[in-house]
Length: 323
Image 1 (cartoon, rainbow, N blue to C red):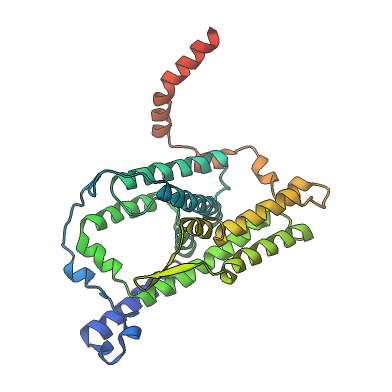
Image 2: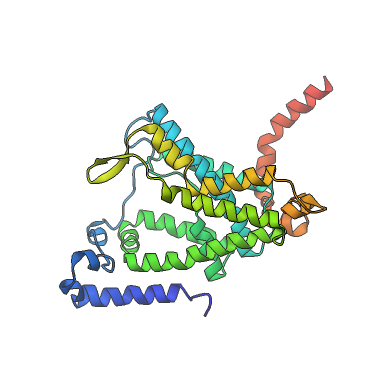
């Protein structure tokens, strides 16, 4: 029952919205502003989408154009996404009951996200690739963290992209169900993030001050500041490129919380006899055991392929050492 505690209510609510809204016309007497949160097909996505579609790949909108403005904006967004990905790695390990990833495993994940973002840009997609914090909430709610399940889910998403009618039907989920699901998963993500701090000594006044100061100020600064904006098409847009970069890359709550915590953790001296253990750094100095290798080491075929690709460089390095 715990595994399906979110999925079953979502499906049940989806069915009720379909019966009340689409079959019986129950939303006809409600205002559009309130009924749109429960409608299934708000923008006729499922009815107008084709059944099967093969999107054009690689430069379908023309050749790529490089501008410094776009580069700086994406650089600020990439820094924020990198921080979120590193936090998602640790949170996912915590939820799945796996050891915390070391720098080598986290670096491999960031490298694959970068390669995926490059491929996404070449395929004319409007978004980059990154680790989603919502996935942590899904794994924590369903208690399913198998790699086989993740691979099957990836295959299912590819099929949804090709069978457009089914993908549009899923995208037309009522907003009320989406918001309710996010309330459950986001709350779990927050609690998991706080539980990771158990590796440090939470009874230390130093650590309590750093956590409270970073979280409070990181979340409150952006709410107190108002970005100077100009009205364009009914929406507020930043009045300059510098303001957008500062707002997304500096005033972002994620960057502020992490930056303040990092600054204070490196500058405020530890008060205990063992500063490494008080700061929670001792867990990163442990030698990888068999369980860590089983979770984070690359599968044997991939290791063989990587070794084969790096063989010419190893031979050149050994020849240079002999000379």
